[in-house]
Image (cartoon, rainbow, N blue to C red):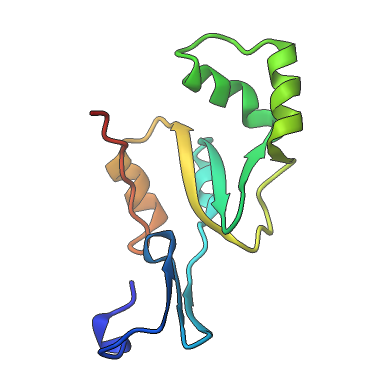
Length: 129
């Protein structure tokens, strides 16, 4: 988190990714990246939100589809269509601009996941109205 004391009274910069990226007067003063290796250790299916795109791992597509379709399996045609439409990677290592993740399944509660990620990261659940 960027402390208020680090910023002047007037602010000329950019705050993005829920505060994970902060730029002031053209200089990056914070660029916090998601520790995806911690998610991988827990076998969590997720996508990575980067500065201008979202990355999906090829071997996660079926599980993401299952979560999106209330447990129904994706067909081969649907997976092929997703592979063409989405930015697909073989793994998430060495992603320079991964700022947030959206996870689709986990055996961990949000509190447990937040504990494993560390104090700089927060887990929030979507609110359905």
